[in-house]
Image (cartoon, rainbow, N blue to C red; front, top):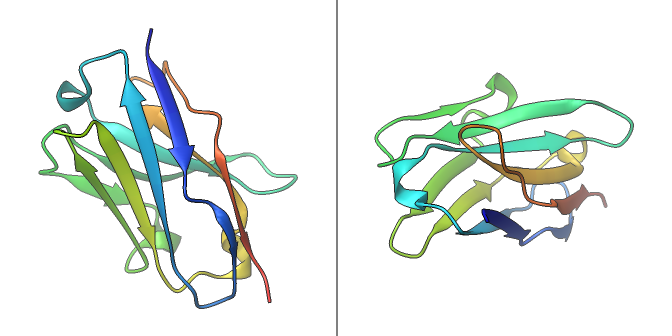
Length: 114
């Protein structure tokens, strides 16, 4: 059974950085694209970024371009999201998801506040 477990969230001041990690198991990680999605308090799901199976292609939502970097380590079955220049409106639960959308982690909370 596919499993995705996020980690790395927490409280950070505006302008700070965090690195999220997602540990994948139960499926052939290296053959699938992967995605980060977030949900701010009281709001709907928002796509953040996606990366192809071999990291050749990555895409970002406009508000994350230049601040967030998605990456993966297929040898370790890990997906990452490096988040820099964080803003209060980045506060959200961040989820990693299988490229098909069929599998999601339980999320990790990122709070950006002074």
